[in-house]
Amino acid sequence: MSDAGRLHIPREYRLAVGAIAAGLLLFCLSIGAALAGETQSLRLGDVERTYYVHAPAGLRPGAPLVFVLHGAGGGGEQAVRLYRWQAKADAEAFVVVGPDAAPAFAGRASDFLTNPRAWNDGSGRGSPNMRASNDVGFVAALIDELARRYGIDRARVYVTGFSSGAGMAQRLGQELTDRVTAIAPVAGIMVPLRPALPRPMPVLYISGDKDPLNPVAGGEVTLPWGGRFHKEPLQTLAERWRDLDGCRVAPAIIVAPSLRVQSWRACRGNVEVRYVLIHGHGHEWPGGPRSRLPESVVGPVNAEAYDATASIWRFFTAWRLN
Image (tube, rainbow, N blue to C red; front, side):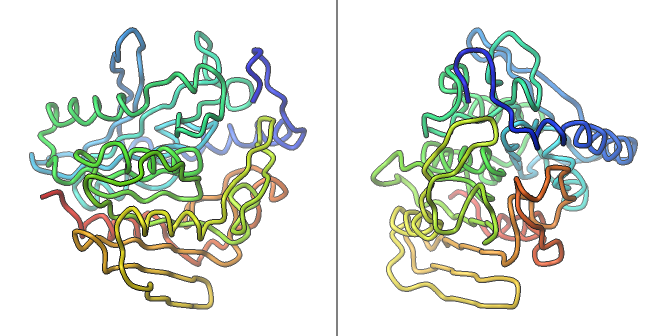
């Protein structure tokens, strides 16, 4: 991603952007009447941040709160709706919020191609505006704001995210251990920021074995908006969480036709670290609608293999802060 005010856009992204916009519009219009949320703003210092929030009708105080962090180029509303978290919130009675990351260039409207949003995950990637964004502070302030507004249960605050949002979820899992109950990153990096955690963190990590942007074996990856980035093997990432959580014994391993699951359970505080690898799946939200990006960019989809939203919610419900 360029720091000079322009982005290098691969040809396949330019060709796909019209289809993406049309698909998102039709999807959101189709569910908008039944599933109403609202876009709000929150001032953090001298910066106005935006987020999309949905609370089911008749929600009582004491409900859980789920953060859904979008991928690079996306937005909070898109992630909440497209990954079906809004419908899940209605079915299970919790508040769901989709914050918006900072765009590449401040003072301009965000745009998928020319001014994409992405999270400050601690990796040093992205533009100066992204790297300077206080995203940890934004999430902490949102927890306080939504607790004040909806009376959420602060012992049940969960974070999931896709791609760039997965990297941010893992940063929050290290830096907000007193506020975040459990995390579920999907297809993103983990930047080690602390040698130890004051409190162990339950983690469900999900990715696909055909993901060209988050490869199982790691290596150099060409980023969609230009530049290259070295990614670690996914097993290394899972084992880093194992070590941070002090898991003492070998994982249980389940191998199915479409999945491989590793689960470490003998961990500090009785938390669990679970790593789910989906066979034949690329860089898409598992179980969600396919994006309009070409397979050459994001890889294939194994649509029936795994419902990430349902599985993540089940994982979250097992955990609460003491």
